[in-house]
Image 1: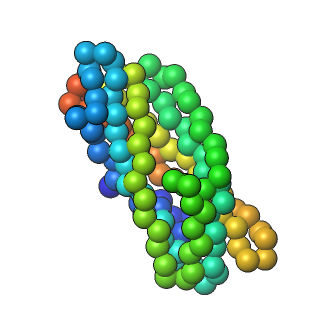
Image 2: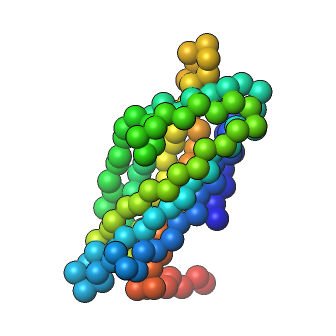
Image 3: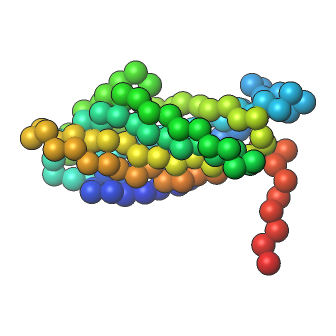
Length: 131
């Protein structure tokens, strides 16, 4: 599990490899990731936009921007949490994702919340050696 806190908003991510949706022989690897966003602050916030940077094992990067997550722009009152699951395919057996959520306070102020960098590893990934 990966966790990052920005301005009292806690983002926790748990990735998992989807063997049944992957075809290693065709260089097609699929992961799902569960995200929990917790508001530990005193202000109500709304998730407005998302930004993802997805990098495969060859270093090729794809950027994804859009409104909300999974078709929603959840409002989180103090102490509330929102959870969702999404996924991503890659043409390599491993990669890394990171990003930000743009949040908005009731007064219209926006701020970015970091999504922790997390690795996408399949059983087909070549282990890296650490010296």
